[in-house]
Image 1 (tube, rainbow, N blue to C red):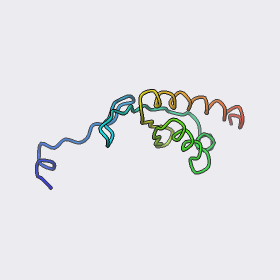
Image 2 (tube, helix red, strand yellow; image 1 turned 90 degrees about the vertical axis):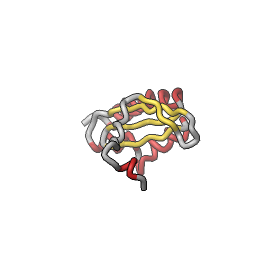
Image 3 (cartoon, rainbow, N blue to C red; image 1 turned 180 degrees about the horizontal axis):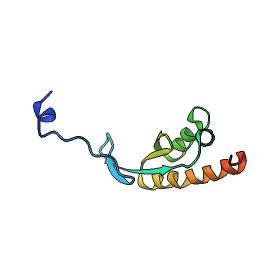
Image 4 (spheres, rainbow, N blue to C red; image 1 turned 120 degrees about the horizontal axis):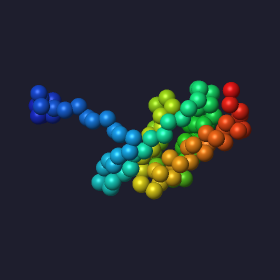
Length: 103
């Protein structure tokens, strides 16, 4: 490993903002968006589905990657696809609140 990468002048990676552009492995530009869901663990479980099945379905349909930490969802993909997936998540929250009732 080079000392330049780990030397005194090395910088820690900057945190990813709520909306940014990153480079994919193929060099294409990707959009990164975030969505924060309100609710308790049970409501988040209904939103994500068993073994995150609902999230995987959105990823497949919109060709995006969705990562979740707590109630924050990070959506990465093409600009239009990421915006569409981001717009779908609040609709899924509303739907599950109607179906399961807010407790």
